[in-house]
Length: 322
Image 1 (cartoon, helix red, strand yellow):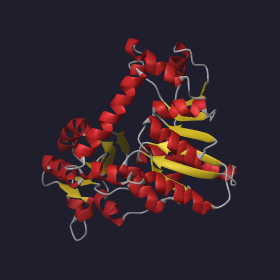
Image 2 (tube, one colour; image 1 turned 90 degrees about the horizontal axis):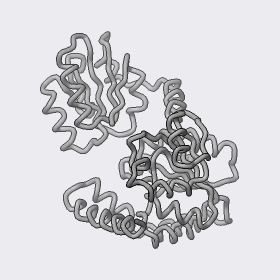
Image 3 (tube, rainbow, N blue to C red; image 1 turned 120 degrees about the horizontal axis):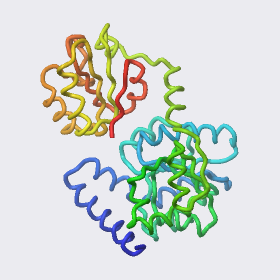
């Protein structure tokens, strides 16, 4: 199975390269990792004196927001440590590289080949690793275990129908045992780990609630959204996929006195334009709202990254996509 997994990683890398010819996001995924080890080496060298490093990894912006309370608490409690943050997706990296200053370094995660893993860990030399929610890169986990570097999974959640707990998931289930401690969202997740022979877990809840609570207290204001909402009841739908929209749009179109603010998981132009065309002339893109009678629209489509977390407070109810 290890060989099959390694082949899969190489095939995945190859497929991303093919996709990058047509897909801007895939192109960023590739270009962001070009000469990445030379960039990491130079960045760490600029630090000067050796430092204790904690490595935090998350898939994208949503998972970062989930892990952010832990990262910031670690930064506050251990100011002498340095934080190395990696992301898998361009949508997270592009935003955080510009706006987040509580990590000492921010990079894409090199793909999970054995060669990349060893080179990455040789350069960064983390003393602790924190993975957020569901990032299971098995070559990284194996090498971290070999080097006796503790790995913590934050806000982990498991379902009974997850492949880890199927008959064919035996190999992957064993890989879970390479994780030092699981901070799970609920008791059910812990029981599933226990059924797999893993006792190193505790229920800590979903850290995204901590982040949302902190954001809500900031009361960041958006005049366009204020005008759109008016006195209407508002449903905020965040990180939606087409299947979510198949549920949401008929409800909104048939409801009276309810408006929808929707932020798709993907905000590339083709995805946004497709969504707007499905809704019709009652939909308005956030980026095109200036100069328009915003209050006359029923659906506001958030087509920019980085504001969704502040938008939830406008809602009477929220729908979380995925």
